[in-house]
Image 1 (spheres, rainbow, N blue to C red):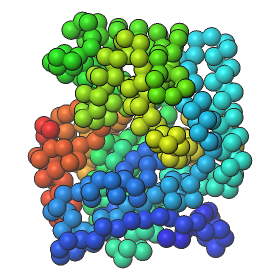
Image 2: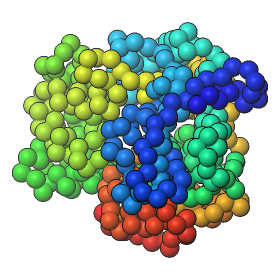
Image 3: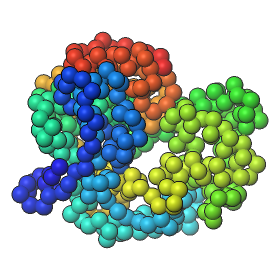
Image 4: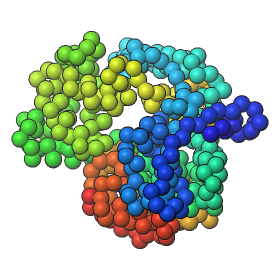
Length: 411
């Protein structure tokens, strides 16, 4: 799909947006557009890998459509660094505690920004933000032939969806925002909430771990186990753990990345238990594998562009974010989202979601003029597909576009 690079100059440079469509299996109502989050996740690849994501009932009535937002995957992707550069950048000490470490971190931030400018160009970097992506989504709605957009967005996809609804409230047919972000927060506030979300999720992982025979922690108290984790982080900061896979170092950044990535889905918890068992004995190889998956590093050593796109999009969306060397100025969306005049918009929050804490879903649902809050009492990031009770409510809403009742479901 062709769209203007700069909507202020619609007749000038065009870029291509890559889409994928899975046809409806029965009597078609229209299309449902999916965004899998990030920012930076490829919707095309995610839909290929997810067997459709939505339920058979929704598949019956909708073409399932996903896309790579501008700057991502097959849609004029942002490129910044090669394998060695990203290996180094993603290994920067996340808790610099000496002047040398602070300078090293700043130097790599500057290098990353410089490389993005050289490899992607200022013109593209200036127009990969979410406001432009929302405009693209309205072109997509029209291209698909739908008078109103039916949309299911996960994580960052809730930010994209809520901005779309605020910009085009009367062009929404039905919208589900699962794992909600709060667009009114600045990056510092969001990061603080997210840090607390990962803390809550880690505590839940530990309580679950204590029930397993292979739980590697010596203590069976949450506080004691958190202390053991902190000591592991410090140990990896002082001297990298052993890695039998390749020449890379398993330092504190890698260990933290592996633990945080494993909080997204409870299906990762057994793998994390095994990796931590080895790590406490000095071997970080399995932790490195988990970190690689989270960072988008493929088995051949190359990276997808998820992380580079994430940085580029965030630095445009959140000019107050830690992007001091970024080569283009960002444009903050100027206000809370209201979407006045929209139909009911369903906001879904999971109580122990690490990446988008439940309080953000409550805040977004309250901001929206016609927001409806559905609560998923569970662990992990996002809810749809993991709870019969919740899935039934969402499916009925997507098919009928009728407002569901607020309420809670257990996974």
